[in-house]
Length: 447
Figure 1 (cartoon, rainbow, N blue to C red):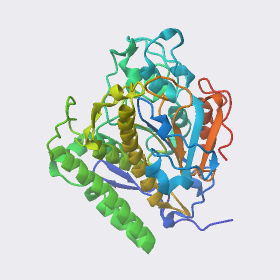
Figure 2 (figure 1 turned 90 degrees about the horizontal axis):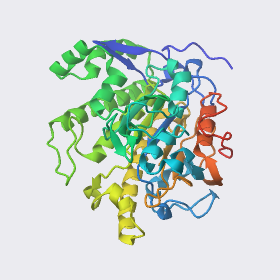
Figure 3 (figure 1 turned 180 degrees about the vertical axis):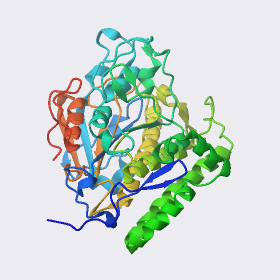
Figure 4 (figure 1 turned 60 degrees about the vertical axis):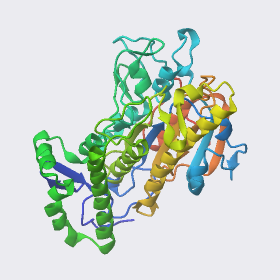
């Protein structure tokens, strides 16, 4: 099949003072299929991958569906995702063996986060001789990162120290960092949405950024002239889509400005964040919007999002849980504590639902951005009370450009490495890898 030459090249950037603004897919760029082969430069929607992490395990009795296969029942914790059930894969039975203690003793939280995407066993140290493995996101970034402005995006909501003892002799870097570029090079996450926004859309010129901030202008003001020259080549649908895209960018800018001006909320025994939204839910959702925008504009195709550091003892008074999360995770079978844990789990699940619904609302070719993404959500701990690392809570959402058969609960054999899942996702990014950490093969039954 042949197509006429698109009137707007896929890699068109709108430029202004220190700004290079990527565009979403437009009809004028030519047709986009949903097959997972190649990139949008060849008229094919690219596959994206994002990894969301929550700490301290999950209240598994309220997480795991009792039935397997299609039509699984929506459990209490999965309820916020009910509308998107047909685009979900609940995966049971996966293990992070690298997070287990063996001879290393305590430190399950540090090992849980650092082993989650690497499949490796982090070296127990609180010194500078840290050592882990390469994470799946960075394997993808090293192979396909040259096709986008940013090879990957690492975000979170809690800052973390990159040194010191944070968990039974493990460096703080292990319990606050999910992404590892090499065995000795952790990639710290960015928690300030303003910095993330500038990284995605603002260019690297600090002087021009200062000029924009001084004038309190929108990034859109600096690309307006360039965008006006584009309009005559666009059909009505493209103009509407571009307006919606610009509106999303402007909305985030305004939210960032508002969050900088609002006074911090008072939270018991928890310092208010600085230069970021004081409201935790607003902070998470702003980061989710930025990931969605980054994917929509094809600025990056790989992202990691740590919703809270491993071992976090953040209180959740806004869902009637004033106690710390980590303290509650050591529930000892107490039904009241488990009920409060479920409230925390539900809060996090509502944030995942927000991101997935955002991606589902963005049309791209014959599908949606969610159809062209693989969003993994989970924890490196099964139950916080037991500190065990088998049968992890793992959920995979999105179509993977037609390479995932969703709407199912799949249970794998005991001790199946979660690294097998990462290999299977890399396959769908057209990245050939035979081994990742403790992997034994490429996870079957995803399609």
